[in-house]
Length: 237
Ligand code: G3P
Ligand code: MG
Image (cartoon, rainbow, N blue to C red; front, side):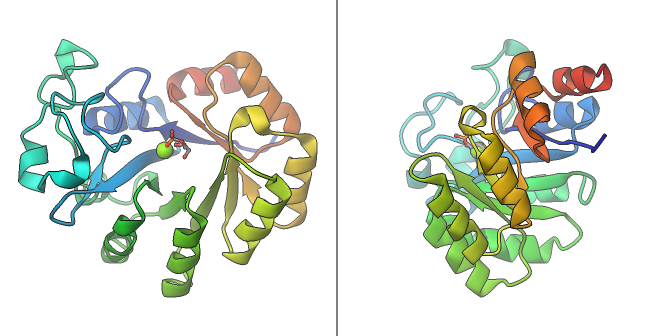
């Protein structure tokens, strides 16, 4: 039976506030194989780990992430919205995550804002012991990263349009994986990826029936919010 690569989506975001060190520690404790996180850029050009363009949902701040300096972002509480036990969690910088447990877990850096591309690449090169894959829905950004960094592992995120056209784009930028929404998976898609030498890692897989479908179709890895649960299900197969 092939080993499925289990990514903790925004960390173990079912049990801790997403995209915080608490969520990443919970993912590691659960035995996840890698962390997925989302990156935006602060107004002073620092890659910070947060999913939304605005601060409203996952912190006690409000307004655009890109209009706050790192110092301003660091004053915010990114944990209390999830639970009082997480009060005081801050929005991590990407550098803090790379420095934390460097080289232990693979890190999937999803770039949400193309302006962060160069800074992310510089950090990935500086932390060369960390196993990094950079992913994005922005094909132009992936293509630009590929031209700047022939060695950089890339993940091609896809959610709309013709998947066969997207697959050509993933191949053109020499992505290592094609990452669709799990409800869009099909046997033909998995087969085409494998024929072209691409791994396929769907997101975000949280139910037992969704996991079963992924296993039946033969995916190589998946993103989940609760890696402990998924790994328990996998162990019970
Ligand atoms: O990387 C897969 C997944 O994270 C893409 O969607 O919105 O959760 O960042 P989203
Ligand atoms: Mg993401």
